[in-house]
Image (cartoon, rainbow, N blue to C red; front, side, top):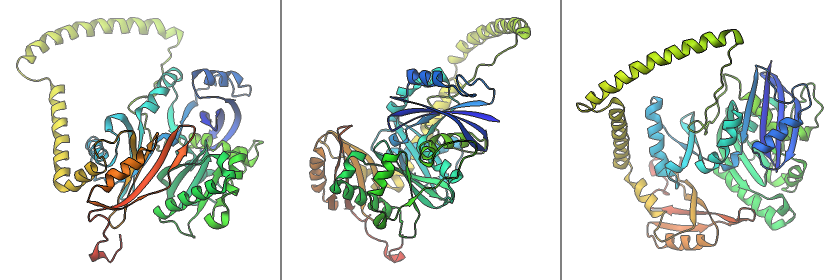
Length: 459
């Protein structure tokens, strides 16, 4: 039997949940404390553990899973050819440079194939670096996005799960939209929605309009399954204020977990922990955006009887290796005068391969380069583009954030460009907590927004 220790932050509260089982898991203990998730809070959470699996949980089968806030990630889809992993990563980086407004060097990313397209998950490295000291101290086995964990837990623990649906997980003043197709996560998007503003009819209408726009973008209709997952009783009440009749939302009903006394809302709150446990199974895969920054490692312990012989053998081996290393360095100095080191040559080959991919992309789609220059006019400061969506036969949509009303100046600059038309500014949303304004624009760009005549308007 495995013991899973799941740690995550939700609605201003840090949770440490202990689960046990294999394939199907049971919650044994839930300890929570208000505040940010850091080393001090996690230490206090462990000290609070009082059950049979509390404290440090030293069982050999125990795994520590660190939940990461998925509201910080950006997602997009891309078409990728069949290549080996090394070449695929170079291709992904090239496509990222052309479709994302943020430099690739500032992003951590991971991708996964989902049919003809692949889902790319990116996150700014600054959100990762703030967690690294805590991760390296406690050495969790995995770092998993909470949104992905909720989607996986829904598939396993919902009474009647749908393989093709849209999950609306409302938490931390954010509606996180998780699109499932054939039981696989293919889309993630966040919509800012503060529960304090739900008392205002105008705010409710804005949220409903934004949701309906995304539903249309995803091709959802009245027959589509849209599932509500409130993370607390307050957010459950917020869902009720959205008038189901217009949005046609369905509540999420979970199976009753064995050997545990939790009400239904508490089970919904702890869905991230259930998903973390499921994603520890060997057959499961997850988006590992931390892969280049943190890798789990465990120190091996030796028994007392073997310690000294092993230590003496290791010392002798180090002496032998040291001798041969010095010999190698002397020979290497001679070789450097005659040829490049293999590692340098390998780096040169990799750089040449990347340049070849870039030349191929520019030769086949020079319009992409022109488009990026158009949506980044000179002289505009304080505007950060977060997403660009374009598809043949449809208007281009760009989204971004700003700390002031710079988006008006940005829109005016775009209107000066003759290659753009029908520029429309959608209702900006001001985030009081972050002091940021989110906005989106739609427009027609050259011939991209014209439907292909030979296909009779079918995309």
